Amino acid sequence: MALESLAPIQDLLPEAYRNLSSQELDERINKAKATLGKDLVILGHHYQRDDVIQYADFRGDSLKLARFGADQKEANYIIFCGVHFMAETADTLAADHQKVILPDLKAGCSMADMAEIDEVEEAWEVLQKQFGDTIIPVTYVNSSAAIKAFVGRHGGTTCTSSNAHGVLTWAFQQKKRILFLPDQHLGRNTAYQMGIPLEQMVVWSPQAADFEEVKGSFDNVKMILWKGHCSVHQKFTAAQIEQVRKRDPEMKVIVHPECSFDVVQQADFNGSTEYIIKTIAAAPAGSKWAVGTEVNLVQRLANEYPEKKIILLSTTMCPCLTMNRIDRPHLLWALDSIIQGDPINIIRVDEETAYWSKVALDRMLVIK
Image (cartoon, rainbow, N blue to C red; front, side):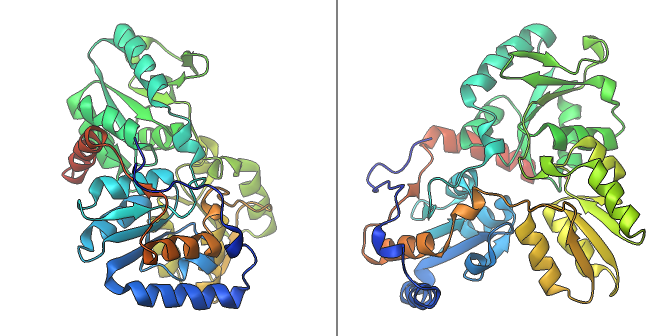
């Protein structure tokens, strides 16, 4: 992946944006949006802070937003209020005339960073020697463009947390085994719900360059899980669920499948971010929910549905710290740079990587 060579790449927010009041920020962002009009679309991920997502033209998960951005053909500029891999996916799907901007380049994803392309290529060689041509790679969309391209080149596809079951079903129709990247928990939880026992799963550790959690014969292995995880969802524990139910037996627990196996097994419901939102929205007034996902989304749901009791499963805050790097000063900086004709932080995926990444994404989109 390469960043747009002609665009200035700046990590440091200019001093002029650092001390603006809340009112000044709101006024200037609104004015800039009005000035740019249909030439701009702002995408806001569900985990964004409220003071930023209020400016989003579209809200959603990463892939949904990337597709929204590509559909806005009149917009030459797509500002993605999310993290780096999301902006890469948006650029992969965007038209040639569209430029994708990430307001703060430090907004990364620890999960995506746990699967580096060099490590994956080295692991693939070992796995081919161990298992032969019996493996198909599948990557969660929460991965870099380089990893998506790797998967695309090797006949695999991507998945989201909402369609993982269908994608894994398709993948098993292609090969005997799946290499699942980069989130071991989503892979394990989905495969287990499909009836695959834990004994038929192993974990590949890139740090050790070896297998972990080998509970049975390698001949019976069906899932090879990359040792990666979401730093937010990993913080939720089975003990927290027990404590919540002890305090209030009427409380329903709903969690994201990026949570650990024990947490998902003990929860009442588990599913994607969209699933969590829709389930709580459809729940009756007076219902009670402990939610195991990012705190900004949980607080937003609590504000939107005051007739229901909605709390964070954990007693400590669980924000996505890198997502929270996108704030109003950085958003205004990005907007001003477009108006001044010198846009900053354009995310541009190189042509070959974009091609194979799109192959992987397109394969997913035709899977029922």
